[in-house]
Length: 140
Length: 394
Image 1 (cartoon, rainbow over the protein chains, first blue to last red):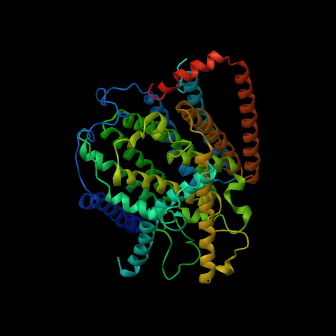
Image 2 (cartoon, each protein chain N blue to C red; image 1 turned 90 degrees about the horizontal axis):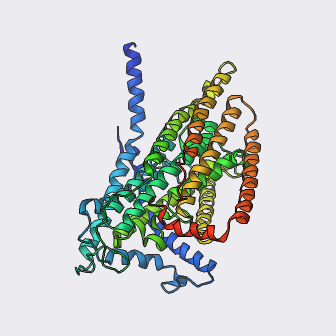
Image 3 (cartoon, one colour; image 1 turned 45 degrees about the vertical axis):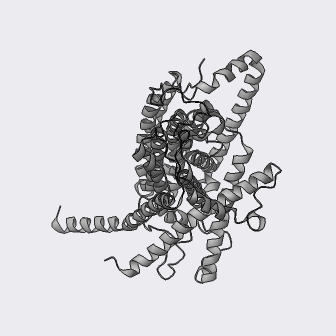
């Protein structure tokens, strides 16, 4: 890559990063907003501690045990499936953005086949997961 | 490089968002209570100010004067951090959403968006609003309360499940405009009525609205905080301003979702009859603004009305809607979209395709409901009901 081309790319990169400066400034403003609204009641509001106020709320009963308990959750499979579909989406977004410029009479069938085989493969995985009972949340 | 000319439109836009969003949040609670009263044949708030209009102000003052209860058993740093994260993520996601007409000629350098010209607008929005799940999960865990923990875990499952149909439904919008920038997506839907995205991909619009509503954790998708099962869900141990920060985040999400629905599918500030000749004047600019805000108000009204007319899902139904309903529909929609876009067919084929799918799913649904309602014996239903409370956790 020639030096000028590199310089040009670098300039464009900096220009595209510049459009994020407002978000940086705005994020400081939002942080300040949240911090001020959290701190303000500490200054003006009354405080009175009682033993009942300090208890975990369990519908007015004395709490039974601690909330730090191992919990059987079926999320492991859901999380993996989520990753599967999210990766699919990561592939599909660039296609959606570039679609107009990459589709020509020569390439269109190739792109269509690629898209259909990508989503077809995932669909097979989806059907397999369904048959395996991943989406079964009710006890039989 | 950063001059005053660059900074003042930013400060004006930031000022508008930071002032209007909290006030709008407070007033949405008021409008919501009034509408709920209307639906349930009650009067609703009418004591503070004329017709109860100052109720929101009174609520705002009350919030700041309430005691900051910090129970002994919570994990303090994360307990305070969680609502802050929730609010920051909700507010940051607005940065790329135009809240007024932006393409209609820059008015003296001002643009009704905080960060104009972000190439990856929609992707940024999905990423940042997805992060707000952290606020809920951390809040639920740090509260060290069983209700909070279950609420937080449900919320996590809900968030990641509905993230996928949300992403799938946006593909068509992005492909039609060829960009992720929301301003350009709106620009591509002008000027006529028939240019709106909703007409040629009604299925995607419906999916987007459903999934986005689920991401806001509101009824009928408010399983993370459903009162009858979990007291308050993830915010059981939160009160005063910290509770309000959570709710401000929720209402901010509602505002964002309403804006997005209008901007992505209903043509944003475009309306038939409003042509470019109108735009050169300030009056035309104001009309455009009114059109956008009127559409957004309609969507917000719809969301509020949905809350008071639909019953809450059961947790397995909620997950079923995402995994057995919306995701297969999204994949079908994607196949249609791919065929239409790559083979360069008329985009109206997609509308026909969507309608056929909706019709088939509707027929299949009615048929299956009929079958189960006749074959299920009473004892079967009774066992179903008994096992219901455990499903979220198992």
